[in-house]
Image 1: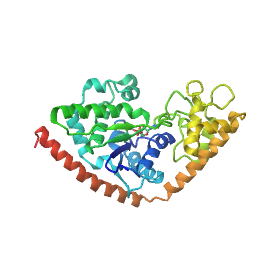
Image 2: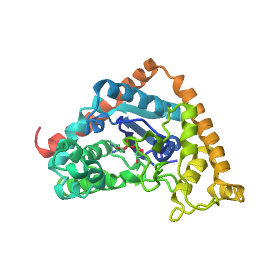
Image 3: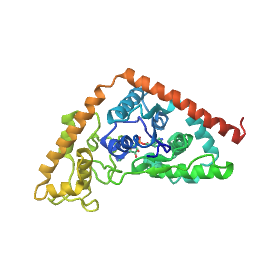
Image 4: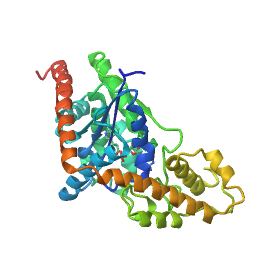
Length: 329
Ligand code: TYM
């Protein structure tokens, strides 16, 4: 038991939440609550780095909070809060912009390059500066461990670099956090293209299974998922990336071991495998959605309000020290 360690992670309400978010991030959080001091945020200021419809954004913030709860995040054990409710996040991001963050670092961020594509000159400054706000989220609370999917590893490393640079100048102010990434399921791939990660911004919704998908729609998506050439069920991410991705989903949502699954499907075809996988996914979603639907908006508002009260206190303490250190107070 290491109750002293602080865990921080978050999800941005910028699209439909899918099983990749659950497998890569939230399922780890649920396990960590037993051992650590956990803080989970709905990082809404990250969502507005790309255009959002205000009504839909408001709805999604609530939806993500409910998804955390339905997945098993327990507000008695963990703190759940909305990033924009705590002004210290953006205040610290500004300080880190000036001390610690370098343009050369931000130019290396692969997520920015992917998202901006050829339009690097015309996207918002916010999209470019996104990793510094993420560093502020993490460093503000003296976080030790950041449980995330693989795509966020580079951002957590940047937070470490920023912390070290700041500490070099001002002394031991920030802890240097570490990313925690699952061995299996850290990168769930698209059902239509196993070279791309399953993503909420992808236009073709058949690429992903949303946590709130209609059950029969989800079943169809699995049956339509592409497979590799050949006929045997094997786990081989190099040569059978599509099948290996489906095996990973099967194992992690169905609570099975991959080698055992491979053994059980010896001599059986892709059709039978996908039919069973669809059943596993539908069962998981039905259970998840039952819990989701039992949570009221009021319950969520109360939990977010309690989280806000706690985080306002903790963050203000840190900010007081920081403002003094840099000389603005
Ligand atoms: P976001 O909202 O894109 O994703 C939330 C979490 O889900 C993981 N994830 C996946 N894991 C496996 N397979 C996938 N296909 C997949 N897609 C997404 C992500 O790795 C992430 O852990 N920048 C962050 C949000 C953030 C944050 C933070 C995270 C802001 N501040 C501070 C940790 C700490 C993001 O955009 O995640």
